[in-house]
Length: 517
Image (cartoon, rainbow, N blue to C red; front, side):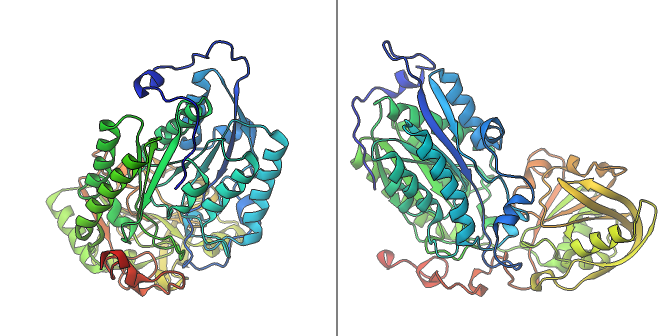
């Protein structure tokens, strides 16, 4: 817990309406440093450790205006900061994205140190600053760095000293215990999954940093660990009880002035000691209130733990039956989330649907880099016959599936230099990608000759995010989330994973923390 004392305390309503008004006699703008380092790390995923080269594959690190336009968190922060009219943003060179995203495994310590060392060196050259904004994720895993985001905050704190406000924004899938707030003042976490409110959390960070920098807010914080771990597929905030947990946090924020309540649901595929759910509360100098709210949120979370952390989904053959029934009723299109496929190469649903005779399916996408390489080496073009084995190259992917059909498209798409689209079977289309790919909207499939509206079924590699475009827009009449046939990485069967840094017996539903026994 961290409490910083500043000068004055003012009413939140007055502060929130203060906008860009600069206090009289104050001529110099506030200087706020901005850095970004986001990764949702699947430590159980194959492929080896993630190195610096992997972070350079999609984009070189950014600074300046390109950094300030790199994602909704930072865009929200930048817009709010500039609206005030009294803030200058000092950008620090930041890595933007890693090839493979959340299917990539441990970051090496050398990689982590290289990027953070550069940020710190640039920060030192820019001192003094009046605040620090860190756009983080919360589920980064680094070899020999147990709590990477907390370590980033610690190293920034060493440079800026004890009185400069530090705020971080996070994905609700973060694994963050109290260590981050030992060094920082604010942790703003998305309250919606899919994460519609990332921009808003960035705005809140700008607002909070400015308040502290002007002596109008003195952060007092409290953190709790409910002792719950769950697969992310259970965490969709479009349904109870996940929705209710986040609503309780919003109610506290609405009832009490100057209060921020953040809830991490956790990311179970990172083998890190702070895995699982956590709660962070920030108040304006009121430590007693922070603890009271944290206790209430912690107690409520534990009371609803069974509805939050336990659930099941149909395996491939049962999913095929449900899809066929929906087609028979005319409840199409059907969107199927292949939720557990972290590497993206699983062929279980494709084989089950083929065996059931289901047609008019768009599979998008299956990871199959070697197939793309062979097509490129052969100089393949649209219209060529296709007869290849695809996917199924990791243990959780099953076995490769042989596809005979026609190459409909081969070129740029879905953010990659090269993808392929193959028509086969009873009006089916298969999209091949070089790495794990979540497709969130039907329109994302409108590539080359592909018309997504011509298909009855979509199979996407996604847990919840696909609901943005397929469910919450009303596009798909039927939504099915499917499970893998065995307890591989990514499934709801977390006790099948070889954790080394986590004792599942201290986390519900596999046990309970010592303070609850």
